[in-house]
Every structure is written in structure tokens, then in C-alpha cells.
Length: 317
Image (tube, rainbow, N blue to C red):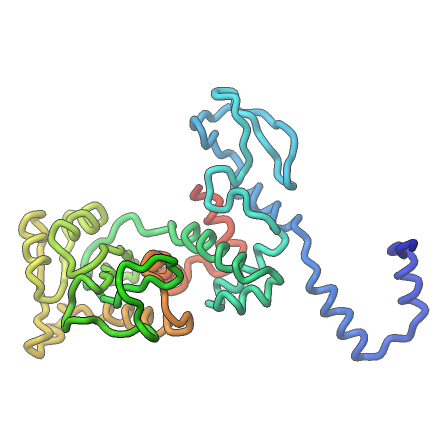
């Protein structure tokens, strides 16, 4: 059977009197048709001038196209690449849906909600989440200065989605077998200065140690910084070894603030993060750093559009 051409369909539509409802349906259908040209143009613009991702040579020449993207051949190692090579977005398909999906990321939609809006399968939506979100969340402050608050928050470890558990399964999340903070809890360390710049670190299971604090905080703290924390001994030991000025707030004794000495900013970030995380109905421990980075990007409001998120993911490759 001969399929009608676009001219035939357009002639048929022109001959029919469309009602208001029909026009609305037609506009909605046309609005849902996405063109990958806009997304590809953003990718090419963000990746313009990149050196070779294989050998970092800056000399290359054009070498055809593939999947809509310009390919280049390096004059140093003779390997070919495009603007997405070496980024978390490499080899992902359906580029015409990327900007729509990134808007779902900005709206904090769940996996199934984003799949419905974008028109992809839920497994594709999940895979894209853990490609796009870590790529955008790599844009982090390089240094925290002046007064810096640091505190950690703990969540019960989760093996959600794992096919092999190393412990008996819990029902509806469950509770820890022992009281207090122990090796059943994941530690998320957050440092935030008074200008609002925030850094997050997933330090693993159990209470944070002085060695972990040195590994995470020492490279990002200015030399003349004032670090404010709770009264945990690990912070005192870390600051003494690193020569950092330290003030502690003993919340257990009922002292929450001494003038400007408090950790209420970082605790407020913890509260926003936990409230925001509820919509996802449990997060696996191996993805906790992705979600904290996602919340950090949203909270900082530095990437406010799908185009900004896409360019950040490509440029930081």
C-alpha cells in the first residue's frame, strides 16, 4: 500500500475545517516534535576548541560526521573523536530528547515522570539520570574561604536495586540493628562558607575520621580560613594537624550559636537535602554522591536552564 506523502497529508488538512479542540491537539503534537539540531549545535559550541581527549594534542582536522556530530582526527595520535568523546554523555542516543530530559532534571522529576515527559523507557531515564547529573555536578567551587561551616549527615545504607545483598533484606527501608551512628550508616560531609559556596563529600560508612577530613577538606580550604564544626574530636584533631583555626559548637550542651559562631547554614542545607530526597522513595548508597551533587547544583542556582546543564556536561569532559 502506498503511504501518503507530506504534501498529501497537508492537502488533506487544508481541506478540513478544524475545530478549536482539533487545533489544540495539533499544536500539542507539533510542540512535542523535537529536532536534534538545537541540541547538536549546543554540543558543538560547548566542545569547540577541545584538545584530543586521547593524547591532549591541540592539532586536529575535520574527519567527516557521525550521529550528527562533527568528527575530528588528531594529528598527534591519529585517533578520531567528537565533542562528546571522553564525557559521560558519549555514545548516548536520542539527542533530540536531551534538552527535554534536562528540564526534568531541573524540575527534580522522578525516573518514571521523566520517562513519561521525554517519551523514553524508564530504564533509559534511569541511565540518563546517572550520566547527566554527575556530569553537571562536577562544576564545583575550587576553594572555600573566610568562615566555613562543616558538618556531616548520616543515612542508613541502602542496597536498593542490587541483585546480591551482603545482609538480610530490610522491609520498607528498615532500621539499623544498633543504636547511634555505626557502620550501617553512610556519611555525607558538607562544607559551606558564608557566601553560599558548598562542597559535598561521600566519605563512606560510619563516623567521619580526621584522615577523611584531611583528604576531603584540606585541598579546598583557604590557608586563613576559620572552620566551624560541632564538638566531634575528629575535627579538633584535623585542625590541629593542619594548622587551621577552629571553633566548635557544642550542640549537645544546648549551645547552638555564639554570635557568628554557628553551623546553622550547613544544617539548613542538610534539611533541604533530606526533604528533597523524599520524592525519590529511597536512594541506593552507591548513588548518594550523585543525588547530593544534584541538590548542590539546584541549591546554588548556577545552572538554571537545560542548555546550561548540557554545556557544563560537555565542557567539563
